Image 1 (tube, rainbow, N blue to C red):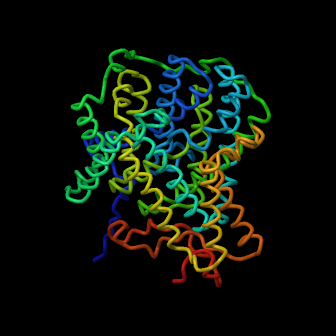
Image 2 (cartoon, rainbow, N blue to C red):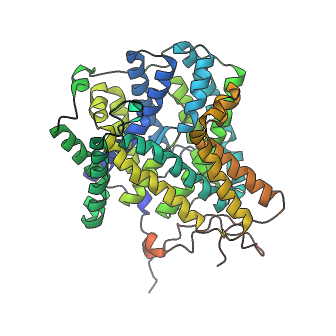
Image 3 (cartoon, rainbow, N blue to C red):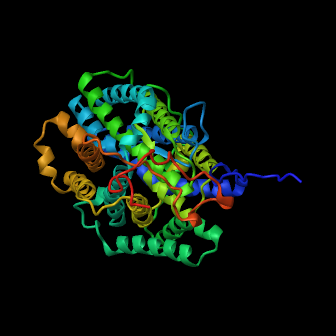
Length: 485
């Protein structure tokens, strides 16, 4: 009698019931919201935009985030990784965009130059995606793991700032108030307790429940106000080129192209990270599809008055914490984002979540991103000086922009626009040192191989979905790509 083998649907491709899709999707929204709105807020304030213009930027950003997330998770043709990746504005672009906008005179005039550079860089990213994906062999675990660790470490201060009350309170007596720290710590402890003692379903909603509980406590104590919800409009539609036709200038385009190059490295790391978490096969085509989605989303950002896009690290951490791997949850989150982008009143309701409460949740999620990087670094033999130096020097370079700010203040604006970012500095350093130590010396490196991962993290029935391209044929120097088997 012939055996009939049935292959189960991979958790990434599983379509959950509508109720779960909605709950898990909304959890992604709450985890993502603070990071999503902080970029337009920082840029708008730096360029001196009015409150009305700032609200418009936030709505446009949310709308484009939703479209970009659906494209990335659902996939259209060869666009989109078809993985649970939530798209948001990259933090790497904040400093360069501020420098470009101020250099162009600030205000909406500065925005037009920013949008010209964003659109051009998005087109370049889309066209360069298939070529960049073939360079994955130059990003072995030592590079990918270092980049992801850097992303987590450099984003942790953002969560800690929120825990203290938010970056907007720096220099004010309220910053670091014990009450703010109590909200953050209470939210974090609530999440940890839910993960520890909660049933699987409740544990997967730990972040959402923590944010709701923290906000409820703050409201009962009089620290949450919904006045902005009452004053917000019910409907707000973002129109293409709202501020006028973009302006295309050479140096801003070059600066934004460098930013997108770093973003491509970040996206590559994000794709491998989510593959590591979900045990879904990742190859060059997957990376190329993800990069094309970044390019399309960035072009849409420039057209619809928003900015460059990349997979959001906190949501990758959320996937690992919740163990909910369905990409259709991200599609649901994208639908919610579009609704929030079209309904300012609904968006302002989510925005009422206090910064300290968000900070408590962010500490766990950003830390989980760093943990994924460390997990990948576990495949690397750090007993050899060259790998240890790649990691050590890259971590130092990543901390430079945030710890020695006057150093960058003395640099030319064009240089400052590119390097004044910890993720940029650390990623460039890791790539350059890997080329110096490993590639230019002709040493072979191993690509990421997850076949030897703990099967408890994998899928049922030994599904062969957990590997990336296997090790190269022939002998491999065990010091370079991964720890010896």
